[in-house]
Length: 249
Image (tube, rainbow, N blue to C red; front, side):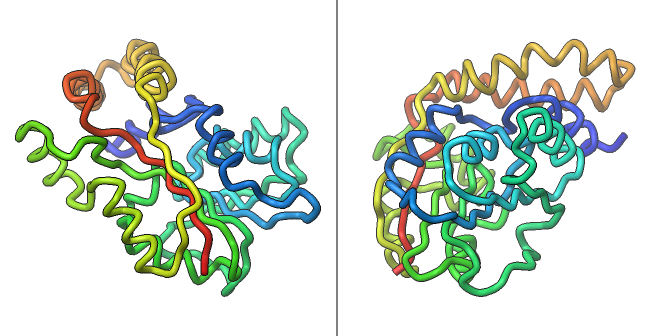
């Protein structure tokens, strides 16, 4: 297996591939205050195994196109959707978010939890706006500084890892500059990172290593994830995912 294949293998049996929770998804949905008297057409971009997709399907009057690049994740989502009787509300699409086959103004709502960074926040705002109807809604979570200043170590790390990390006020300005109106904002609490994402991941390390013959590359994947966890534990007061809810003008 390649390193990417091993990372997929580590994450494919998890509810989420990043920080978040059902309560975060539902809080964002509540802030949008969407109409209940019409069937919404929704795209969940970078859906992974679809923890939030399932929550949306249960709580929205709509049909969801769940998009991800990795078929392993979509297989998991399809299986969950079938078990829960949600196949009429969820259709999966294996596509890169750089190459989406959607029409102009096709969607009432575009959702993306912890995934827009793959093409960059502002780039995503611009590209995805075309797929929204006028008055349509956008809900995205994005890595965000939650303080105005922070230690140099974590500043340098994130500037190298993802130069678009910024404060919420600057992210909101990007939204407004690109034709959106902010409806609501909150950032994910530490439980969404530790209890909902990191602790379940740690619990999978042993079986992951056994499944992959305790190979050098598998051990490397585990060590890199452990380093990520240690970094968050050390600097968790300075960054999180911000959840941005907006409407297309």
